[in-house]
Every structure is written in structure tokens, then in C-alpha cells.
Amino acid sequence: MIVSLTQSGWRVIYHRAHALLAAQLAGQWSRENAPPRLYETLAAISHHDDLEKEWEHDILTEAGAPKDFMLESSTSYDLLRKHLERSLYRSRWVALLNSMHMTRLNAASRGKSEEADTFLAEQAQNQQRWREELEISQEDADSAYAFMQWCDRLSLILCQQELPADERALEISKGLDGKRYDVLQYNNELVTVQPWCFEDDRFTVNVEASLLNQVKFEDNDELIDALKQAPRILLEWTFVKDNNSTMKEDPLS
Image (cartoon, rainbow, N blue to C red):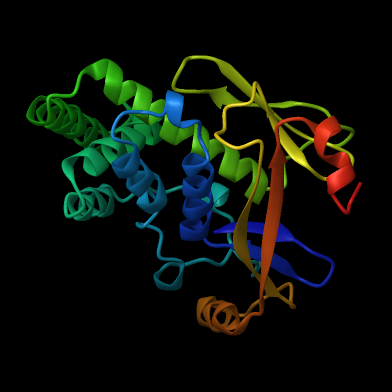
């Protein structure tokens, strides 16, 4: 879960919803510069957080607050393997990108435990086998994964409310072309990416968030029940290529 404090409690965005937002952003990318196997890549982005089942885990901090995903400290490699196994039901390409994602997220654990080393070695073998079977070069796989990581990062920036104030730019990451991209929110709340990399000059994306009206919960079950009953809101962001050419069209200007 992505958890933010509000005046009356908490705002919670499920990880699967964040992944869907990432896929929305991916779907807006310029077709001329799209990554290999675009639609399968979109599927990988949309489902890369399917492992997260907040309603089945301990999602409460010791203080009784909803636990943000950044506070998670343990890794179940068996669950990661099951997630990758399920991704194969979509395609080997989806499994390949998910495997590359798991490798990046767990790279810091290399050399710290035998379990981590075994998992990372398995993924290196899986990735090589899938590339060979699909006749995909390492370069194309790296390009597609850079695209997936870029969309994931931009989605997290939005969900975690990290857009800087005063029209200051924030680096997203390097895209599939190796270029640096920055995101910036104008004072009229429109958002842009520099350099512009999307197909259309203007579009809107969204994500659903659940609102909790209490700060502390007695146990995990109480929090899960509250989340099931919590009202939801739709958070939206409108992206524009050029703020000057669109301000007159926007009611916020």
C-alpha cells in the first residue's frame, strides 16, 4: 500500500492501482519511439504488482497505523517465485520483464544471504532462457525494462505526492532511449514531462484511493474491514506538452 496522512486519517492507494496508473502512462508514450512488444509490455507494467495482496498480509505498524510499502523489511522469495510463475500464464515476455524487475529490487541483497543469491541466480538463468526462446536481444530487453521502470517511477511520484512545489522539476529516471526525463507541475496544477515523450499533446490519467477516517487501528482485521468499507476518490493528473498553449483552455488557469 502507498499510505499518506490526511487531516482526518489516511489515504491509501493499493499497489495494483498504482500499477494500473503506470500502465496508463505507458499507453500514452509516443508510438514512434515505443519499446519492443508494446502491448505485452503494457501487460507486464499493469500486472507487475499483482503479488501485493494487502488484504492477506500484516498491514499494520506497531503504532497501529496502516503500513506503507516503504516500511516492509522482509522478502519472501517463494512468493516472488510464485508471482513469476503466474506471470508465465500471460507470456514469457511478461515473465521476463517481471523477473528483471524482481532482480533490480533485490540486487542489494546479493551476497547477504544464500537464499537471495540463489533467487538472483535463478532469475539470471530464467531471463537468458526466455530471451533465447523469444529471440530477443539483451539490448531490446533492457530497453523495454527501462520503459517499465520509468512508468513505474512516474506513477510512484504521483501516488506519493512527490511533485515539487513552485514549478520545480524532479528527475523521473532515464527512459528506454537513455535520456533523462523530468516531471514538473505548473502552478495551475497541469503536469508536464521534459522532454515531451507522449503521443498526444494533452491527456489525463487517474488512480483510485481509499480514505480512512481514523488514525489508529486495534489490529490487522480492523484495518482490513475499514479498507473494505472506506469511500474511494479518483485522483487525476492532466499532462500537457506546453503550458502556455493550453492555459486558456483549462478551467484552473
